Length: 141
Image (cartoon, rainbow, N blue to C red; front, side, top):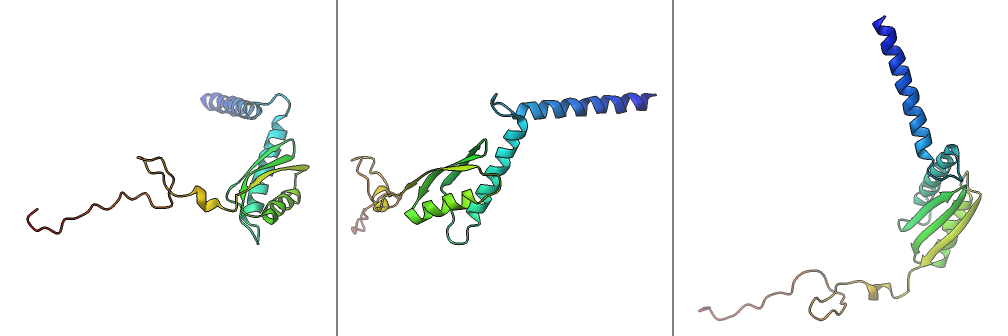
């Protein structure tokens, strides 16, 4: 008798967990839980395809999917990379359309790198190491 109660209680808990899990996935009133899961799967497939592209890798490209429409955001170095990313996304299963918001990095991207001198606020191209201290050649110091 006690075993039947445990089995029923376990069954009720499993069904409750499943219902909460499925309804919790759909925070958007315009998409069903199934659509949300499909979009997540599509996002994963597109990210995987971009990461396994034979010519280019796309570490700076973010992928979002809404009702099968994939949005690409991020930065690449060349126009050809932008086009390839869109084509890879379009050819992925589950993609209905692609919105390509990828931006080209400026040609002079190195000008934006480096460090900022805390005293002057001027951007440099050095490292984050503090300036070397000057050593005295005088042995008495």
